[in-house]
Image (cartoon, rainbow, N blue to C red; front, side, top):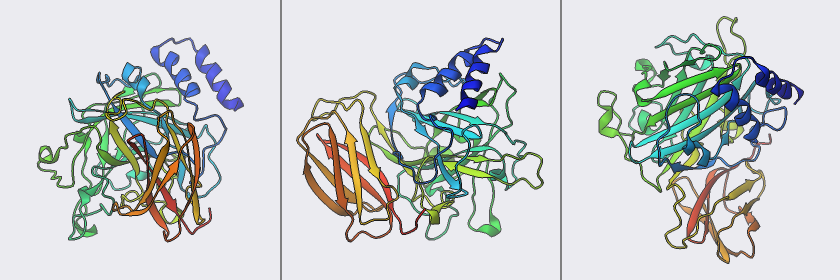
Length: 399
């Protein structure tokens, strides 16, 4: 913590006064995510579900992140250790990250604001090389229809475009500067024998990364494509965005701390969602473990109740769970005297459903998992005619 305080003091005392110097200490200090001196390990509780509000005024993509619309969006941390899974925690000055996401039905694009701190930035990736995960890169995993499943190659049983793994590679901006040049890598083809590495930079129409010291602000927009995507005709599979749409979404960061090694090798892989040990590095090939993104209207009240939950906090714990029970707790100002809890499989089969009485804003319930095997499931919480979805894992491996 002392190192963090010194960083804030040094940053505020610098002789160069700029918008970044004013904004960055406040943003990182007030986000509330980095109150300790270590990153979380895989499985530490926080929601991997996110509601993206509609951007009434589209943000200006400039790597600053001070647009009014961002003030209404929620932060989600990038704090789950995927590689090495279960290893000791990272010092917070090695890496920390968080992100926000919004959407627009005017442009049919998602908008991202990502903040990272990285003590060493290893750049220099040259496309179309296949070793891009060994550099410092930001990754977006997106499954347009939240269908899950494999997405490596086009085969009889799966499609490469079932989900996208966008590996965003940049060269580090100068201190106090920015870059708008990027390469966006993924895997395409029908097998390893004809594998290609397309550059999907065109999927990100606006992009700027700014840097102040070891702090980076990534701001960009993203087109959304369905699984019929054809690289020769991308426009044919563009998706129109609307409130209520649910997508799979995770954010991650490849962290290399040694720019002088040869060959380069990724040291850490940090994600935004909890994964089980057996799925520690599955995101690039399987979308089953992605987080949940729901598009919602900005401050739109419920049609049925005329009431909007202004500060919902829904937690599932322990997650992953090794036991025959799991707990749901929430703090919600939605009205109503009961709550409906359902557990669904990833293919939307209802495995459990029960109605509970609700007497106050704070609610905690133990839920039996009898008859539900190991795997990834959705918990649907319905209250006052509004539904919220959270993802959890039932595992048989101790961390």
